[in-house]
Length: 252
Image 1 (cartoon, one colour):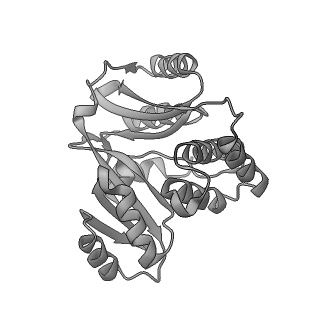
Image 2: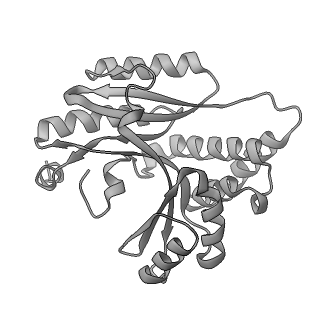
Image 3: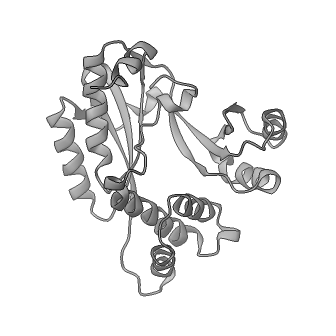
């Protein structure tokens, strides 16, 4: 959607509303489990886990759920395995989506995503049919009004990042995908822990969504997709105009 940051156009996320709290906690603790299992349970030596813990604490995930996820991940007897799978999808109007998931049952997840897309006029795409429309980047986000935009931009360039965009106390650093953790650690030493650090799919070009009807159909489909516990992130090559956003935000 159009707004103060270009990255708001490529990633659709719901806030931590009370009704969605349980699902949000599930997604965050699942990320902790996968991060700890892949890189160890010590956040000092595992950037992905460190960021996952920061995100969970910011969302007020109970400490016992965080501790349980780490213990499960580092237990020799733990048999629960989550697989990271990316789905390429289409929505009406030529809108392309990249859906990142963490799942312990690939067949269940594939079936669920396919069913959601079908109900909203979309479809799963063949492997490679959508990804070429996007580029893989690292995105590191800081939310701290005390960080100077000039200083973090300078530091970003110094450590090999691509760019830094700042607005209203938020700072979004981009970098090559294979330098994410390296740059994350360098910036953490200077500015503290980021609020998030992850690989994203940025569209090379976007499709303009210029009517309220089209926007509502897209956002409804995205909401239903995000209701799935297995879906972690969704990226799309659409951009909703400011005029349509204003209409969507009008009181009903």
